[in-house]
Image (cartoon, rainbow, N blue to C red; front, side, top):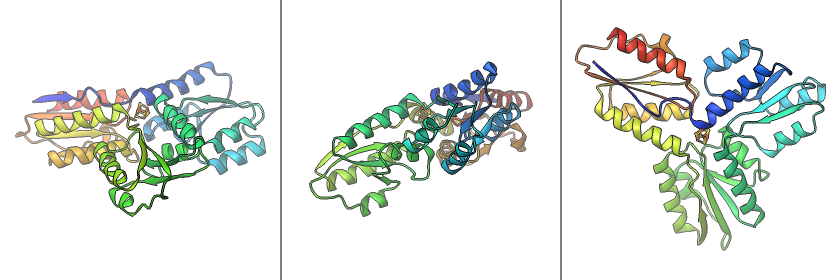
Length: 290
Ligand code: SF4
């Protein structure tokens, strides 16, 4: 049986950089370490870091309380690849004796710069994406939440622009490419002055494209990633539409299926928050067992 691993499977550049940043801080061993939110949407990685003493700050309220109580004194707080809003950086800036280590992905930073400059220039900002996603919360938090979030074409249809206003549209980096295009098409008909910046990350597009191609060519697909990872869920959706034998697993322990003998080719892909070690484990198991 042929086993094909997607070249784009696993950590993207931004996530790898953020996780490495945590390990570098652990190695320094000079300060207690916190991450603002889980560093990746993967419980296994977060638990492993937890065992090394890395603690997670869940939200701005928790951060504020820790700042006031002095609990953060002497520690390092790492900002993950999704980035954060200004409310969070302000709390950290005003906390005594805390080192902020900013591991925001440079592609997300670019969106922060765009919305900040365009908003300051008087444009209204539209973000395509999920309003509850930390990256979108961070983008909105750059401009005091003065932006509209559109998640679907229905949202775009319902949206009423202010007449004669200039608008700028950016996207959550992991948003679906086709959905972005459909929303933009609707907005172009409604808004005269609209500046569109496609900020969808190439890593996501390539991973989705490769997953689609693999799932068309393979008899079975294994998608590895965290249950809370939106990009892994999207990969699963793409693959299961093309390949009825698609499995969503978080680690090898979840893979309890026995692939039947009619399966000639198995494709493996993984979300942006899946570590290499887990992918290799699954790859080895499928190669050895079937
Ligand atoms: Fe950065 Fe792209 Fe990874 Fe998001 S998906 S963290 S933008 S490299």
